Length: 357
Image 1: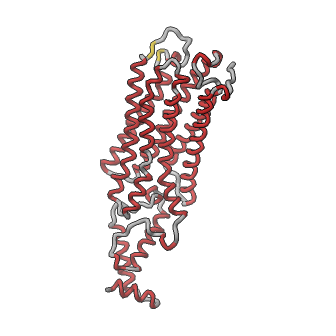
Image 2: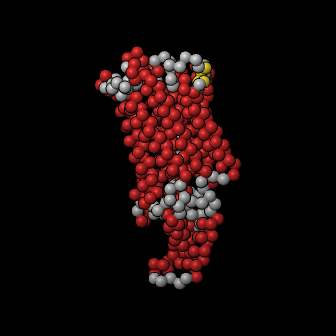
Image 3: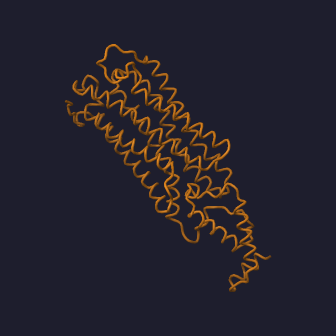
């Protein structure tokens, strides 16, 4: 039978409760707004959305189980934790560790899958390489919570005497290597949008805005780097108390990746909310002869309409096609059609004469 430990007698545990539930609430808002943005625009949820939902669910599970461990004394010094709770904390600790690693993994893969929809060729193959290697690393890290000893039960059951486990130094080295690779992947995925957007025809301000919005994952990389610097605390005999920063950094890393995956969509929602009819087509560049006047404006408006009918993330981010050839043909066709059509009034006469000239 477990013994309840009040958060009032566990200051560090109370701080963890506040941090975990606040960050989970923030992630809920970001993911909820992302899904809301897609639903109101008639978009079908794709793999990246489903992966992000799984990441959010894993974060919820992690938060719930972390709360349970805190109410059993996690956050206190090891010798202050009720003896009756020790056997429960070992299993609960393995569960929270596993869900923490997996929620970070699914958050990062969600964003990587989004990038897959905007790339081709060697860049797409490189992203697949990142996804596969990151998955192997994170899954192996999650398995360590259950299989680092022989027999496996000895990993979470300290009462088993005859066991063979990883050495603390080996566990530290392996975990550090995985943490470093995870942080590097965050930085790489955060910088890739700048390379990807070079081939899109957009206004410079729009290109920078989209790239910055899609690069927020760099904060996950920073959190991951800080986490690596605290991994040595897993070897502590008083991890319940000294593991505070490591646990928080692991939480922040996944939360930053999750929110970063949602920010680009929220940016499009924000721009759409403040968009005026007069400027509804300013978020794409039409490679056309600017002297075409009214026909060029119609072409931009036509792309704007097609953009909102499109179901891809590329359209939600207000990113036009990588090649402007389609738009050029569209503008050229509209121009020729407008030149062959007689004007209806004196206002159209100006645009018509200007386009002909």
